[in-house]
Length: 259
Image (cartoon, rainbow, N blue to C red; front, side):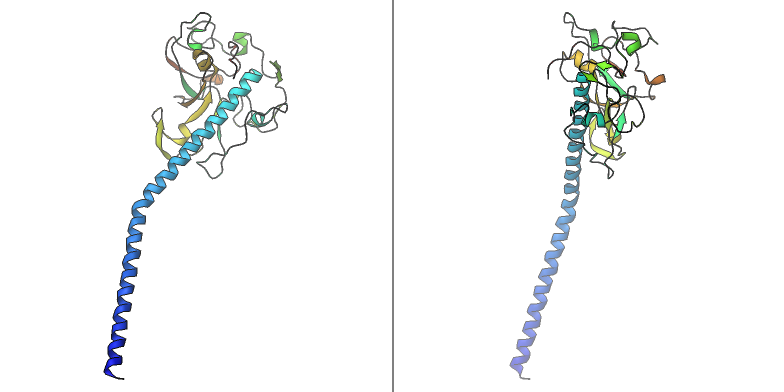
């Protein structure tokens, strides 16, 4: 082999080494950039899922509100929101985006802690929007149809019969006032100081709607401290801002405002 050929081969080896070194450096820089961006991307995905959780939870609470306006009572299964006497209150069955199973935890009366706004002092309004005829019912007083004279579930409620409707199983039993995620993971956002997904309760309370003169009623509540009261009945309402739970059945509210 001539000297010229040996020099040419050596030069080719050196050039190949430089190219390999440049490729390895490029890959290293890409890995470093990915390591820096990956947490941010992961956080953004988590934020998007949280937004979707809030959207879907409020969709269920709003569907319960529509059902309550039509039937005069809360549903006892999610199937009733999908089809009750050929009426659909929920556009479609949404899954819990924070769990792989996609199943929601059902919220019943006495499980959510809700603050009722101060009375509006408008003529003809019920102070604080409470379920009681008076703003300060006595402790231990009865609530529900027995106390208010409202018809019991299973009868004719407004324009909708609620007896033997819905084919789904009722988990936990009793009326459903809202839903919550089954995920116990820590969240980025906070609602009411709660930073775990299963403590975001998406509920509807007609007393809030009364206090707001026909608007709202759908909120994100916290779990009731100390658990539900005996018998699953809501606590008595106190004057002014307070924490209580929604009634288990129709508390004979004033006619709901047109939607």
